[in-house]
Amino acid sequence: MKILFGLVMFAWTVTLTAVENKVTVVTDPADSWPTNTQTIMEKAARLVFDRINDHDVAQCVYRHAFRENVEKVRRQWSSQITVLNKNPEVTLRVLKKKLDRSILGLAQLNKAQVEPEFFRIHQLEIILNETNLNQFAEKYPAAAGDQELGIWVNTIAHELAHNFGYKHGRSGVWVQDYPGYFPTELGFCVMTNGKYGSDLGDYELRRKFKDAR
Image (spheres, rainbow, N blue to C red):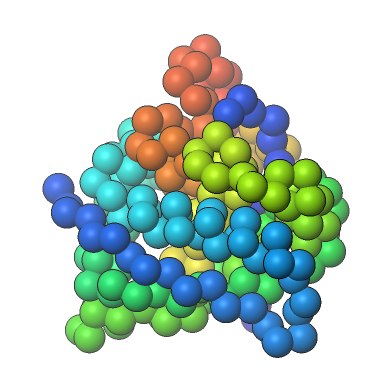
């Protein structure tokens, strides 16, 4: 059975040696993405794979994933990004789907096939909300860098975490389902290049997140 997890939009203001991974974004031949949208998608994916296996990003996630067994997550993620570090070229398949505007993306849990003995990773596949992404690309066709692409960098990293087997709550209440879970914190830590988790440095907000357990 396929288990799909997604990132629901929330309003925000925007010891391993990582190697740069070259990412190739592939789409379904039946999906016709506008050129601007494809470009935005590829720019955001490049930023994600430039950072996702970085030491500072990993430490950021471990600090903020207060709903996880951090030692268990540390062991699992360390082994996965060790394999990712051995893959100079990575393929990410992006599918499109018309979703509710509040849902930016979806991904199948445990979709990725990690072969540690051969240092290979296959089957990285996510779904992006085509309506939201197309509208973003129309409005910001030249978007580049953290501040402009942040929402899609966050979304792609979040959905990739589901591919690698990480999940979050499903109660329907954002503050209970997202902050403190690995996919959410990975998304924010990748977006901010290891500086902040989902509280974006607001310790009062983080306290509220923890109180919502």
